Amino acid sequence: MLKFALIGCGQIAKRHSALLGERQIKGAELVAVCDKNLERAHTIGQKYNVPSYSDMHEMMEKEDIEVVVILTGSGLHAAHTILIAQYGVDIVVEKPMALSLEDADAMIHACDTHGVELFVVKQNRFNVPVLTAREALEAGRFGKLVLGTVRVRWCRQQSYYDQETWRGTWAMDGGVLANQAIHHIDLLQWMMGEVESVFAFSSTALADIETEDTAVVTLKFKNGALGIIEATTATRPKDLEGSISILGEKGSVEIGGFAANEMKVWNFSNPVAQDKYVFKKYSVNPPNDYGFAHQAFYEQVVDCLKNKNNSFLDGLEGKKSLKLIHAIYKSIENGKVIIVDSLLESSKLGQR
View 1 (cartoon, rainbow, N blue to C red):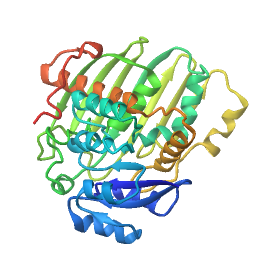
View 2 (view 1 turned 60 degrees about the vertical axis):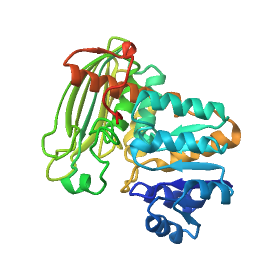
View 3 (view 1 turned 90 degrees about the vertical axis):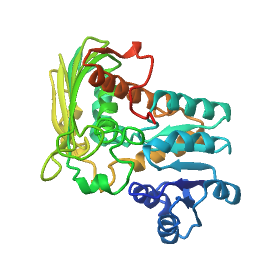
View 4 (view 1 turned 180 degrees about the horizontal axis):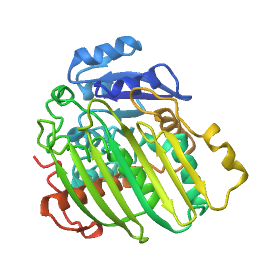
């Protein structure tokens, strides 16, 4: 059994701790948890009968740990990853992997230096409808890609931002693009290919925060296709959708639901026998409060570590969507089209 520990016992830790603490992941077990708020750590530790700590160094020195899962505030991911890498254990870090590009590079360097693996949580890549669409893409069924769009229309009331002082700040969190929509932006880039340029607008429509709660982005991909990102946490009174659409010369797919988890459209000019089973077999992921495919993500982590297989969610891959986020923020700051490859410095996201 690979021995996992959690650093950060906030809301998302409930999902991670349930999978590991209840041994829902074959070959993995939870052995310790840590949070600077010891009461929060105790709550999870007692639930799964594992020791809890308020000091990560004490936990690392006392416990036999092979993989650390970093679930702290977004602005702390880099510092905590760099510290933990020194212990020679493999690392899983929640999205976004870091806030600044410089921090992301430092994380990758630290893990390479100490010979440890770094995995970035992008669980929506493992949604069954998404994987089905990806297989069609790799088989060339879309032909020439034309247009890719994502729509993240979620509801986050002021009470959500007030739960943690770091939420909605440039230094520690970012807005809807860096926080909520980053999963869908990752999917768009994964499906459509590398982005050449972006142009964006944003607003802070309803939330009392530093960053944006609403944004629209146009993209040009290196393969000539175009893209649109629509993202907001100002949907009222409740969540509406989190969808992705891929349009090509030979086919169109739309995956909707709350988190790109429900097949809505599956149309191809040249049908194959398996198409008639798509909606029955691959339509919807079982929903839960925290995500739809964390289990499949962890299963890949375990497989990669035990069998020395490559992951499609390592640090370099995780940095791709972060770099795109910074290009978008630069466009918002400057009011100009930004060429992604020419981006030499981070936007104000992550600056202290």
